Length: 164
Image (cartoon, rainbow, N blue to C red; front, side, top):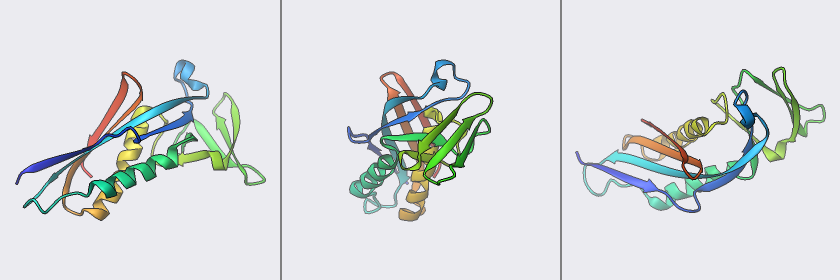
């Protein structure tokens, strides 16, 4: 069976976000990036009628990236960061083990499941998991693999590849 590849790389496939990395030299301070994201989908088809709709995939990419845009990214799985709701329920109280404490409005943050740190590698893995779930539902048994490439600035990028 022939294999096809669709690449979703548009100027609007980007987001800006703030984060910090525990034990990463000066990156342990709160700082931000303008991230760009490229999504590559590989799939097999029996005939040319088996295809993926660019519009629906682009819509999902933009929807997922919009959830991250202009947010403070917090890793929900971290062993070095403890996240608790404030007494009034409006903020996340974030304690970096043996270091510092932050208080962030919940509306300005997003808790990311399944990652230890909000590194570019962690974000690529996170987005791979999110897009894989949607692709498995929307295109069952069609997708063979998914590549997510994230650049945090020119020259610094990571690609996470794997089956859906």
